[in-house]
Image (cartoon, rainbow, N blue to C red; front, side, top):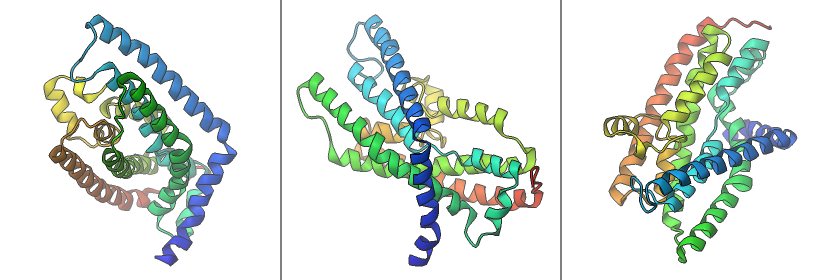
Length: 272
C-alpha cells in the first residue's frame, strides 16, 4: 500500500496545484453554477406558484432549493475531465510519456482528479451544506440535518465519482479512434446532464422514462446521492440504489478495460 501511495500521491498533489494555479477558472465555474441555481430557483418558484404552492410531484419548494444547489454542487464534486485530458494528450503526443511511466494509466488519471475533488470538498461542498441547512432551519424552524443521510450521501458520492470517471474514461478512449473529441464531447455533456437529473429531477419524468433512467448509470452520478441526502429514500431503497451504483462501477470498470485493450492498438499521435 505504501508503495502504491508513494507512486500515485504526486499525481494527487499535481491536481491540487493545478486547481490552485487556475483558481480563477475554478471560481468562474463556481460562480457560473451559482448563477444557474438562482435562475432555476426563480423558474421553479414560478412553477410552484402556478400550482398553488404546497407539494409538487413529491417536492416542496424547500426541497427544490436543496435539490438545485446540492445537485449542482455534487455534479461539480464528481466532475471528471479525464476524457478531455486523454484527447489533448493524444493530440499533442504527451500520451506517450504517460504510457512509458511504470504506473497504471487509469490510476494516474484518477489520482490527479482526486486532488482536485478533495479541494472542492472543502471549499465548495461544506459551505453549500451549511448554507442549505441554515436555509432549511429558517424555513421550517427545526433542524432537518440528518448525520446518517449525510454520511450515506458522501459514500454514494464516492461511488458516483467512480461511475463518472469510468464513463468519461470510456469516452476518452474513443480519442484513439476519432482523434478529436471536442464536438461529441459537448453532445456527451448535454446528454449526461439531462439523463443524470441535474437539469430536471428524474422524479418529474414520465413514469416509464423515470423507471428506465433510474436503472441507467447516469442517475447514479448525482441524482442518487442528492435524493439520499434529502431523505427521499427509505432504508431499503437506499441500500438498493447504492447496490445499483456498485454494480455499475464494476461493469464500467470492465468496459473501460475492454475498450482500453482495443484502443491502445490504434494509437496514432498527431503531435508527436
